[in-house]
Image 1 (cartoon, rainbow over the protein chains, first blue to last red):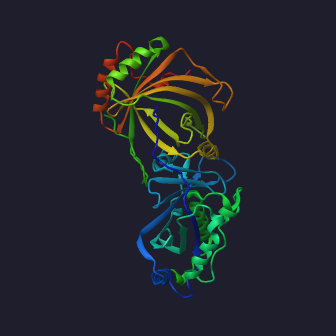
Image 2 (image 1 turned 120 degrees about the vertical axis):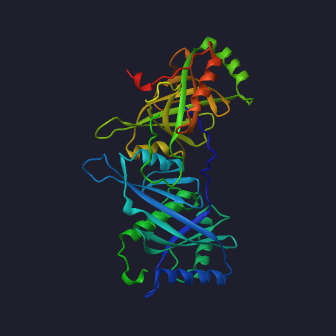
Length: 222
Length: 209
């Protein structure tokens, strides 16, 4: 029996808001992304590399009768050594990357829905204390939508910086600024609970599921 | 040598195909001090390390075949440390001349919501125990000397009872599949602990009652 004392830290992260940006009418996903990049650069944001968030879907194979709840296993390039596993609206864990190996071992009990793999890739920008990530969400190699994640690095308490964040988002997203992410609104501790990495992943998961259910917007996607 | 199991699915992260090489034995409590003294002399020079852990063994039963077993451990002495989740495969048969038990092993560090999450996955806790003792290292090898206690009231790690009047001694090493020099190194180390403790290759599947 090993007594692994990992260096993993499950500490709080700063407050992040993830939202969907609609594709401009008659334009492609790429064009809308380019417009966002241009706006961010005009504001004085500096491009700092790229990012990736992915999500695998698993369903339990040994449950007879009722459909089982889906298990989502996600990764985020901001926390490259970690793996987040979530049930929608249910418990979640943050584990190290070996959790992926464990899912391979569990393949007779949990089947990977291969067609359901979602990826969100894009550029990462910094503007003072804000980190902005504009991503293209793809499912089975077709672009399904655009995500914008904004992180206010100095603050871990959503209630303390939501208004500031909203104002900042207005500066490049215009009037279509999202509401406070429901993951924070529904916490029993309210808006003043500290944000965790899982909160960010929950927002991505909600966005992915919304895009999965939506129709592919025909000619808009290239 | 038997071909190592090959993972068929692509893996995003983590280390595939790690094997645990293991030798086990036991000493009576009366002989514990002399064994610890010997280990202090033989092992790497480090601060003495002790531990108190709570282990929960979870089973996931499928429609057929053996249940899938996972072991979840948490430190009682460092309650803020991550939980340790461990999968151990069936011991490899194959080479009889190999000196140690070899089995596939996946170690995962996980956040504190692990028990709740395992329940949601369909796992059910089968049994739990408390282990406390000493850890020594010698290069890549690890020696764990532990006293095992059963938990009298489920979940209450304060209320325990020793399982026996002896201590479990385990010599283990983690290495990628196919590194058989590991078992040779372990054998010669185990030789040096004789006659205080006889470390042997014990197949756990043959010990079930």
